[in-house]
Image 1 (cartoon, rainbow, N blue to C red):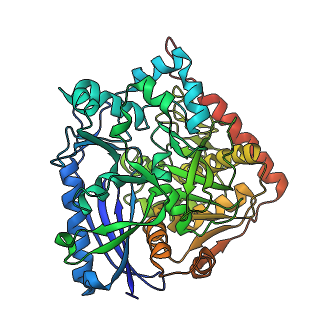
Image 2 (cartoon, rainbow, N blue to C red):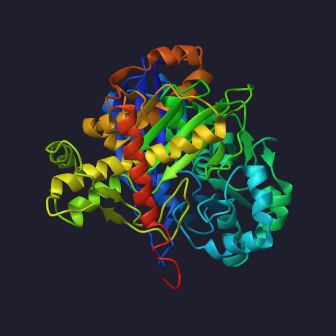
Length: 500
């Protein structure tokens, strides 16, 4: 059995590859920046050829670093920025337009029309998603409607659509495989997550030909081989998952009630709900986590916080209170509390569970004694409180009692933040030794299908904790602080409403 698994991690701002050995340890990492394209305000695009070239370059790089040949690879796993949309020619493989990135808001008006028609309820029931420009469905429709000749070519079966995983699979296999996995399909606005098939009513309403769509497979399954021209020998392509689902899998959150939070610019909190696709009445998304082979899929509830690490970046760049983001921990730790200061970083509105596009950033409780240290600590508390907001929604929706929260992402290196998170939640917070959990999840999924690892139980044993942060705050203080946070949030709501 070959000893290594190659994880392909194609993200929004960079393409990365990480080589893992059979113990689950990263032995080589390569990363290339991905240029961003902003053709109009609110529009965000990527050049698909840049996605392909940067990703392929990092794949070569990690093999060279580790002096590993393609023959030494048991499998390749792919994880990717979700929702980003590519349409390409089936004969030439050439994109008909740039990739429309998940951040792109060009179809916001089309989504508003769907809501006015009441069709958003059909979408919500089938897909578990809210009708928003974030997802792929309206992006596909826009490309067909706005690229000359695209709709006619699609209706003749000449074009293919895919999220980034499907585009990479197509290229890596020399056009032999047009496929995606259930986790990525569940983010398109086009996939019935309970029937596990494309929704014909939604396709018909958006005028998207079914022939455009990839086949949907399990997340851990040998789909075919990478063409030898790319790495020098055929390698099984055996694992695919969207980035946040891959991180949940890499964190070994395999039981219902287990959850992970990724701290980046924002936060992505996912809760494993097992075989049940739990509908949300609390502003969360219902999504597919993964599917192993022919087993039943695992579902999740997902909540996103728009501003987390970006609040610390604002302290650095906007207020110039710190020179480097890492300095916030020492500054915030120089005071025992915030002096009753609360910071709601609603710079672009509030995400889950509020979904208030008109909320704006708010700082309350400032006195003459307030210092930069109090504001720094309030910024870290804001990340922790927003995570609790999502967690409370998950508890209400799923009726699951969480035992712990596993964390990853850049800000998870901040010990003070994680202690505050444990205090605010009243739960232990666990940080793993292996911080590259997204790529690790893709490697785990591929390695399971290829026989590197026997079962999720084996992977569970390979997950190693770096440190656990236990709650220290009393229940009375925790309740009081959270109630004060909610009062601060109420003061931020609808500040930028039209006519205000």
